[in-house]
Image (cartoon, rainbow, N blue to C red; front, side):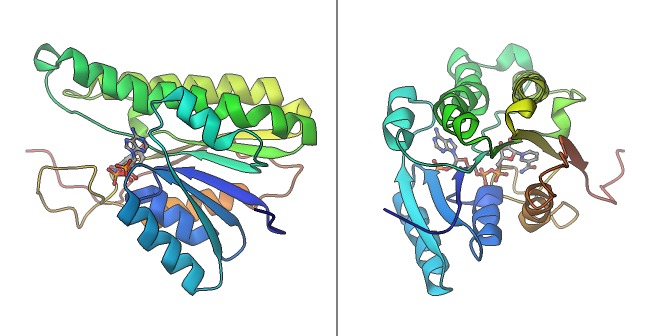
Length: 231
Ligand SMILES: NC(=O)c1ccc[n+]([C@@H]2O[C@H](COP(=O)([O-])OP(=O)(O)OC[C@H]3O[C@@H](n4cnc5c(N)ncnc54)[C@H](OP(=O)(O)O)[C@@H]3O)[C@@H](O)[C@H]2O)c1
């Protein structure tokens, strides 16, 4: 498909933060919306097209490196937003091998698959932006989050190292680190009204993207102003 707009790839675009980012960028960017859930991607694409935007759905499991490469190879991706993520929060001694592996595969290894596929094109064009949705858990651990926090520390280090590697090539790398956000990520059923909204994170992503070419916001952190007091 040819498109005059620059393209923004968003993984985990079917709901939550990824969906909010897609809707936020859609007035100006061609959206490549990647996730596994077809009906949710379809609803997103319809909403974007209904407002005059353009959106392609990529039904891909980000843990499948071969599928990621086959969906993205040959595409001109101007911005890649690595957002897909999962969290299984429980005491480490109760964490099962498949739960550990899932977090490593979705939160960390997918960043390799996606970024490694689209980065050579960005370097060749001397422009592009890789954004990683990290977390405040990527700078401070918490009980019950040993594996999740490990993946978020990992992507923080990845982003900083890659940034130093490709900035001279004209490619920006940024990590966006939210605290708690009200999405379906938390399955506790507890009140989420005190949390950040997915739209708050999306606005931060747009800010990071909209800086002048000479300026790189390599890391941005945000957190709810007034979380519940610990008892
Ligand atoms: N919510 C928070 O409090 C919070 C705070 C800080 C950082 N974050 C980070 O923000 C990111 C988005 O989280 P969220 O709160 O928006 O979560 P969410 O509402 O649960 O959405 C997760 C997204 O990831 C996608 N995804 C999961 N596994 C996938 C796979 N194997 N292949 C492709 N896509 C997959 C899901 O799509 P499908 O299921 O359709 O594939 C979905 O679109 C994550 O990286 C998370 O760690 C969240």
